[in-house]
Image (cartoon, rainbow over all chains, first blue to last red; front, side, top):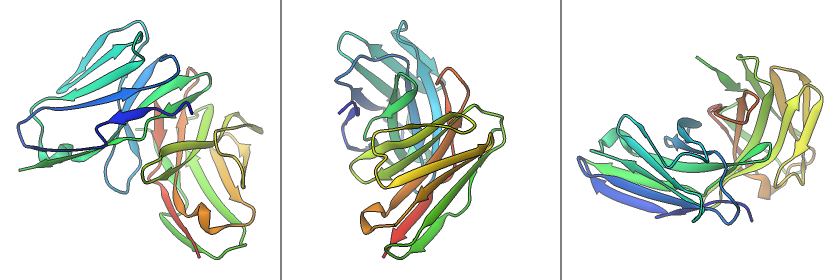
Length: 109
Length: 112
């Protein structure tokens, strides 16, 4: 399967802590995106990192990409209760995106 | 802001019924997608369309068909609904270049 694997599947932290989630693929990584999904809702795009980039920042988000290991990580710094959601990576594969299975993040105050 | 709307948030159908899920986007995007989302399996691509009347199978097209008669509208059809098609269905659209996809709120379908 080309589907991405995310690790951990679930993560519980306290407000103010950092949250790190990882994503890996068996196929090569092209342009990789991260999305967020609040419970029962659609996905919202967070950030895109291109295959020739190694690190990208957006506000409290930091994404890294290691194409040799076919993996990416998403770091959320100084987490807030409002960050509670599921997070998905998505790898560009030809003319479509192949999503990972997601990490469910719970941030308690 | 890009808006992707789906015809229903919740839907209950009986086994064997024909089911239509509608998706409309207002940003003149070329590409539209249908995914299903199941616990522990993430999002899986059912079908996508890169132009009017054009369609491509995704990873799990069996039991589904699609229609794109107008650029802004992409329909997912369950010809004969089965209980294993109970799921959350998400529609998305995007520009060429396969960059950001914009998602609708989802339709939670229950097939009894």
